[in-house]
Structures are given as structure tokens and as C-alpha cells.
Image (tube, rainbow, N blue to C red):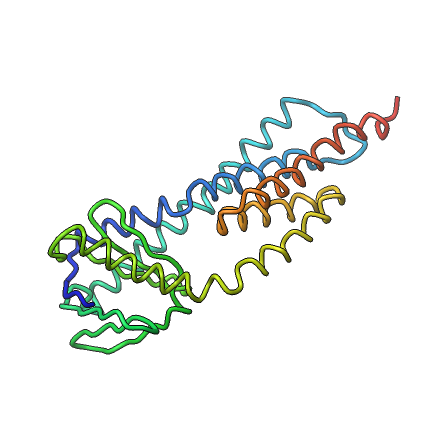
Length: 234
């Protein structure tokens, strides 16, 4: 199965929007967790002041929001503007789906990506796209398909190819990640482990990892809430 298409500058406006929204809920969850970690960090001889806690949380959230959202967006914007000018990204491309990967041909180059190198594929708005683990992304406007069924079949073949190589190691990786939950019994360090587990939980669509990671973060907050009064001089 193959498709011939070409991209326009308008298509790359979609890419900039995609990178801004990419994994938004995950980034927001990590942002909140890190902001809480910064907010609860204080010297043991200092009393808990709600106003200071809220202020530190807000400042940390603004900083992390800048890091997790604005900077990646600006980098992607600059990158795509540069690529559009220097690499003729709007030239005609042909993508062939093969048994062991994807063959991409343009006037300038011929590339072959094995299923192991592909990260994800999806249809959003009027575009079908797939990404590599290097964050390289290919977008195909749906208008170049003869029908919606053809686009869905095209996407299905790519996803099945990705799942074919991912499914073999997925369960093993998830089982190994469960051991990270034990780090949650170490205050503060558990927050880091919790963030990792939450991110991995969303990545693997595993509710248990998300719950364990959230419990790790909550344990640190509860620990310092309970233990702090005993550390504060009367």
C-alpha cells in the first residue's frame, strides 16, 4: 500500500500546534507534581505557612510551564521554518508500507524506517501522521487519500507494525517499573519515582502505574504533614 502527497506551509502550522498540545495532560501532571515538590521543600526549623506554600507553588508552576510548553514550542517553530526553507519539505513524497517497515521516497532522498524506529501514529483533524523515536514526524493530509477508509486502513497497517515489535517487551517493562513504587517509602525521593511512574503509566496506558506513582507523591506530602509538627520547636 502506498500514498503520494506533498506538504504546504499550512500543514506545518498544524505541526506547531501539535507540538504545543503533544502529551499536554502528561506535562500538566508532571508540572503539578514538581510544583508541589518545590512548594513543600523547606527547612525543618521553619513553620508551615499556607501563603508561602501557595506562592512557591505558583512561581514553580510558571517556571515549569515555561520549560515544558513555551520552549519546546519555540524550538519546533524555528526548526520547521528552517527545514521548510532548506530541505524542500513541500516536495512530492511517496510512502510505501512494507512488511518490515516504511519506505519513503522523495526527489532528494530515499529512506527506510523499520517498525522498531516508529514511535506512534494517529489521525488528528485533517492529517495522518507518524513519529520516530528521534521525534522526527511525517504528516500526510487526508485529502491525498481516495477515501476515509483508505486513510484508516493506512493508519491501521502502521499501528499494527508498531505494536508487533512493541508488544514483545511491553509487559516485561511494566513489571520492572512496579519496583520503582518501593522508592515511594523514601520521602522526597518518592516524588521523583512517582513522576516517572505516572509518565510511564500514561505511556503504556497502565492504570496501576499511575496509581502507584500518585501514591508515592502523596506519601511524601502526608509524611511531611505528619512529621513536621514533631520537628518544630515548641
